[in-house]
Image (cartoon, each protein chain N blue to C red):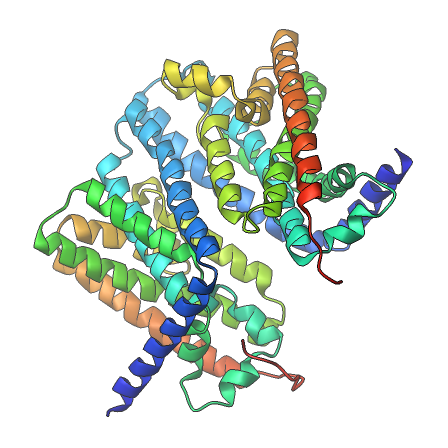
Length: 261
Length: 264
């Protein structure tokens, strides 16, 4: 594991060199949360109630903050892997004494850590300013665990999309579609609790809900029971997706053809 | 042949070359087009779900959002498909690639912008048309307003991108700034303008004129109004002139290492 830890640390240090860019990148979370704050202010005021589906305006905004942090801190892994497959540089990674997927996972984590920190600080500051303090800090360690598992779920899916380059070469379309499905079924733009009940049932059974809705809902309403439910769902989906990823990786490598180099 | 006709023919030749280049990788092109249509359609599900539950946002309903998405997607799609380098102009400037365009007897800005094409722009454009059809405004006058509104939105969008990317003449690396302006324009353009009051609304009509690529043309498509038409024409003219002035002022600051480049 020490080599993957070294890759993670190196990538993290690389990112420190671009701390200014990272801070500038966090402008997007400020923008999104400010727009959401306007949208939900108008909506709650129009509905005329303190709570919608059990969530106050403050809960909704903090929920959206955490969901946005998860989405905006993801590395562009699919594009990176696809590029490595297309230009043949994957050959230089495959013959190194590490597992290609674990290497990508370490690099991706190294890329995400600082983004998570800057996005949380910027997003948290905006939401605090607009609707008041964050939910109970006692739940934060539990949320942290679910965010890590959510990151791994997303890694499995985006890595599979990247590996699709072994077949199609162009993977951006798959990336866009996955991203939007994650937005809708994961509950990035609107908490799943506001959906019609039939759609809630479907969405909550998918890995997308365990990537965004699970951690974000736990953040605003922390409890051990909810934590257990979220982690159980995440672990089950992680086992399924990791199995699929390993299968597709092995199939992809057998198809790989490198000409020259 | 007048100068305008000559430049227009040149523009058509550039677009033809871009299209032929895209057709070389037909599968990838179609995948991006279809992918972008699906991407936009899935994103719109958010508004369907939202309005199913809350009916309206300060007077805006699902029908208004369909029109808004139709204008923004059409404007953005055509702008990036036909003038694809507008989204990477700052890189052209900082990497010294303007040398190639400056050495030719053609309008530099038009030439550089139209020398690139973003394939997914065709997907955005197609989605915009579909959204307009679903909105159900089938009258000849509504179609005319849609065409005019989208055309003016394209110009405003391109003008803002040119202004943002031209800061590279002075700042050097303007990638982050240009990307933020692009994202902010699209993001704000896709929300009901009635959400914003006071200073925010003022900014969306001036410093970051997202209202002129979204809400204002959408309002014009919904119903004709001399006031809205005047606003759109005025804003288009102002931002177009600003973009031309800033880009050409920037050219005076342009420096390159005279690197040998190949234009493919």
